[in-house]
Length: 120
Image 1 (cartoon, rainbow, N blue to C red):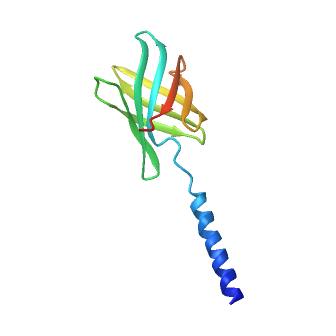
Image 2: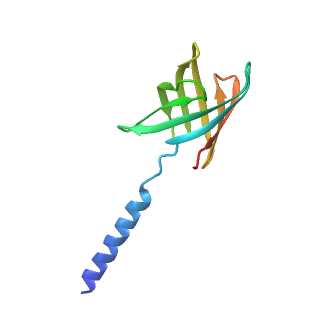
Image 3: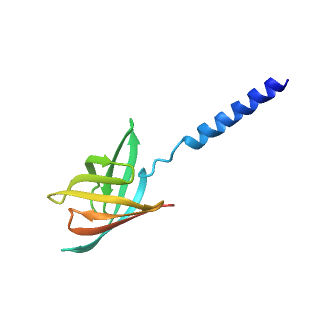
């Protein structure tokens, strides 16, 4: 009986540990992105990312324009770079994790950018 209870205990601990080991997909979801100081003023957009077959894909959404699909998404543990074509330009934006719901980086290495996770 003691062996059975011990086995059940270790089995329960194993399942609990496995459940805790599943990491959240930090970058997946929608992010409100603000790019400051562009020639047309501050730009607001939504960066949409989802994981498909193990790889992040998505698009940049700007109100009043068709979404721009990402041509390339490069992710590291705490950093992401997305590249896309919009309004006649090749654009890349690099963002680094600040905390659980915020990103900070730059667009084209020239304009400061921030991202805030959409929680709704």
